[in-house]
Structure formats: C-alpha cells, structure tokens
Length: 122
Image 1: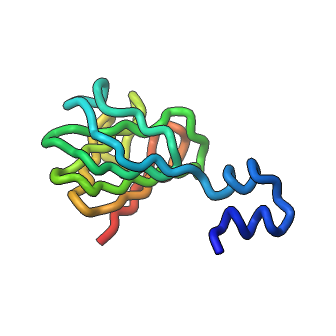
Image 2: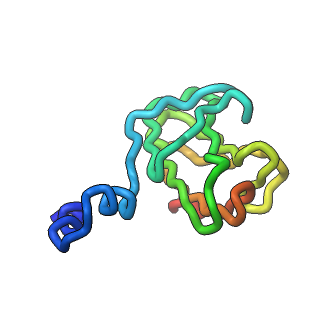
C-alpha cells in the first residue's frame, strides 16, 4: 500500500500525508549553462529525463536546515546541480555546480539554506 494511502488510512488529513511524503516532479528538462540560467527545482524529488551537455538545475534557496531535495538524472549527459546564489555543495567553491552523472541520483541536504551536503548514488 502506498505511504500516503497508509497515512490517510491511519487518520492523517490528505494534505498532511502529502507534505510528509513530498512531491515528485517528473520529466524535467535541464536548462542553461550557468547557475543564473539553470532550471530552479521546486519539489522534494526531481526526475530529469532530458539533459543536454553542460545544462543544469539550481536548488531552492528557501530550505531550512535538514530539508532535502533529491535529483535523479535519467538524461544522456551529466547534470550540473547548483546551490542557491552564494551557497556551496559538499564544501565546494561558492556557486559551483555539482555533477550528477547520467543514470545517477543525488540527495542534497540543506545545512543552513545556502550550503548543502550531497549523497551520490553508486
């Protein structure tokens, strides 16, 4: 049984169940060649199916400590994932993109809204 269905079956309101499990954006297309022109991802889980060379996505800047965004790259090329302007990923350079290879998934956890840790699938 799906998690949302189990939560609502246990008495949680549907909106609470949705907020607990998060939303999925599927079929995304990477954009731009810089942090400023990359696609802003808004959901907790983001699935990219079209990734041209040197294109990317940018993490949300309004996340609190511990909030996460997951990115799956099912495109043909590596996906550059950027932190919010002024931030870092995995203690890298400020505003530098983090490369997620084709057919890999990465989970980004906010440390403070600007800086993120990353866990990359094998």
